[in-house]
Image 1 (cartoon, each protein chain N blue to C red):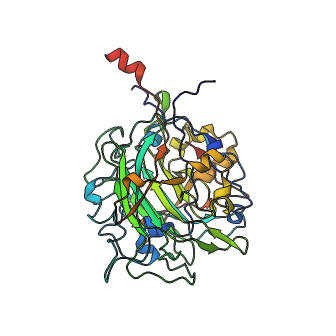
Image 2 (cartoon, rainbow over the protein chains, first blue to last red):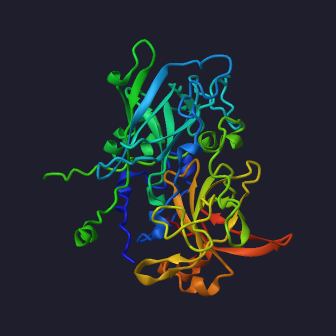
Image 3 (cartoon, rainbow over the protein chains, first blue to last red):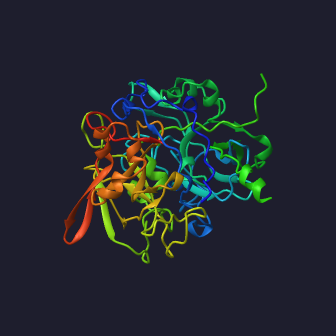
Length: 240
Length: 205
């Protein structure tokens, strides 16, 4: 059997280390030993696949997908972009899931007790599949900042959590996106877990006036890059 | 120096305490999707032995992590993954992927599936039956990947190229789930220790 093409090794300097004491919860939840690096096998180069049958028609529209008495409160935004790999190739047909607080900074979660109110018309989660060009979009409201227990006066910048699969389990990624111009970004201990300033910039969605809908919604652009894959050039040449 | 035109991977950030809202909203306390993903790993038609896997994820203080989410990825009983490069066909409805949420009060988690078969390794080797697990939670900056092996596969485990790659033999048992029968059904226990004595082996895949 021809060895399957592998994914490029992950650059650890692009990510936060496991132990980041400024983000206190990481201290007891970080392995002390180094992970063992595996040469990939079929277990790592495969991963779950999804289809449109898995999704409902409003899943990508957080303004409508939980609304009952009207639209949710908040600044209406379009969140859009492409999922690419490190070779700059689009990642088509992959599942993108998001979750977020409402415009007041409150999550619809039984463990969230922040005093800002639940919005009866806002659930706070959405999902979609990328198209043939790796493109995705959501409609939602801009989430609010909120306080959290780390030091006594830490506030999370407005953010949206993003989960992406790619084509293999080795590409699996969960991250958070922030909004251009938010002064809380450089103050956030979770943002600061990432040592590389360029990498932090990659988590900031950019205001995209050209994609906004006049008199309706403002747009932010967030491109996502998953690990790239080695070319199977050698075998292709033999066959070609 | 000229840079080659590769893009760089988007950095990971913690899934946070409210991961359930996005990925398992039923567990967060509300119903929004017609169909939540990842509840049924094997489907009704999968051949092979029906098993349950259960455990805790334990932090460095010895306490269960109650807000963790796991994802499982496995082959079917004949060693095929539900993927175009998965080695062969799978039963209708077999996805091989699941999402696993803890009981918020105790941290206990469990999932039902079929026991996977052996799958090919590199260079003509055979990998013992295993389930890949990916662990995210508040305080975990980038998802942790590990493998679950089965204690009733001793011969296959002894020949497994990944287990044998672990230089420290005393760490290998951290990847082996222990079987017992509960009401006639096989249940494998797999406690994951994020840190501390007997820390589970994690992989950079």
